[in-house]
Length: 91
Image (tube, rainbow, N blue to C red; front, top):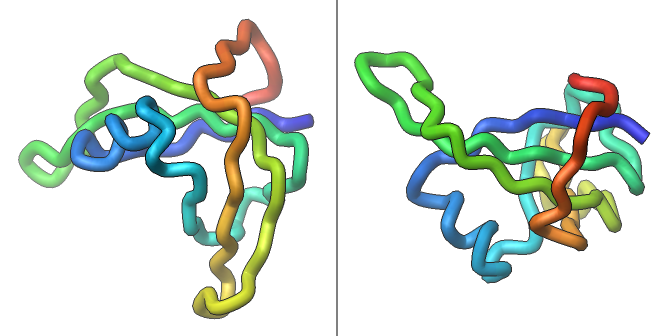
C-alpha cells in the first residue's frame, strides 16, 4: 500500500468531504493501485502558485478504470473517505 498526496482545489474539496464526489480522474503517473491511500490537500492558486489551506481528507482506492479517459489518465473510485493516517509512504 502506498500513500499518494494530491492537490484538490477549494471549489472541489467540500464535495470530497460531504461524500458527493467519490471518484477522481488523474494522470496515471504514480502507479496507482487498488488499496492505495490518497490524501487530498485543499488549496487554491494565488499568483500562479498553489497555496494550501491545511485541510486534508484521505480515502482508499477501491477501483481503477481507464474506460472513456484520455490516454494516460485513469478514473479512481474512492471509498472510506475521511480515513486518517499516521505515517506511511509518501508519493
